[in-house]
Length: 322
Image 1 (cartoon, rainbow, N blue to C red):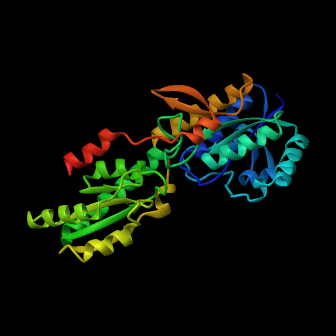
Image 2: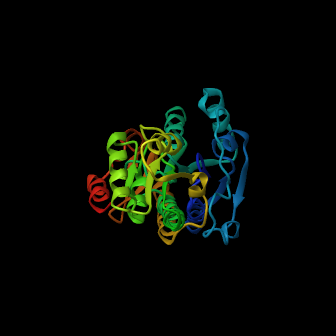
Image 3: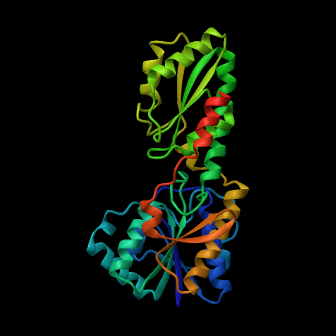
């Protein structure tokens, strides 16, 4: 293998820089040249490459975001765009690629390798949603839930001071992993997620019971993709039926930024080194995952097609502990 390139694609996730660092330094350590591809698949099409040295990734392990930047690429969805990307990779003598991203990133990689099988691509799961099959935790998830937890803790302070009901919306268009763990960690009265059907009558009844028991504040954590709507829609319905003063907070992209936690830095580093090792062993079309502390390889197709399921015990805990 002549050169190994690395890129980040899709939404940024804390820990991506730690993974980039691991890919670059392990590639060089194993005697190969490392290349950074800027702006994901779009940068691949445009040949936006840079030869990386060990010092190129110095002092980045603690940074959120991605030094290689990220971009959506409509061009890569076309055969013409992928052909241009292939030409750029061949021109630069790149025959191995580490893709750091989520399901969209791996879908693009799978299609690309079907058309150009001489380019080997291995993926590292970089997404705060933790919704990829084949790993217990994705890069960025631990930081995101800790960021959400800290924000909700702060909101609880003002909720208690003013006898308020707060609806806090966290990211999770298709998955409720952030909402569920952040809600449990902060003692939320309810956690509303896409994986379950929200019964508005039951929600209103519970909140009214809490008020009658003189509970001076309540927190409801809402994943943005909940079937009953976002936090503003749900709060509007509840406000008409509950005596609480009701407020809404949208955490939004706050959860995607910030310094990665220790676990995300270590996990990302482990996955980055393992991705390079997999390429050098002749593997391709697989996502690097970590299950019960062990590195595993999952074909892109399986990682994308099979959704991670919510642990029912966590849902029961919300009900028991609220």
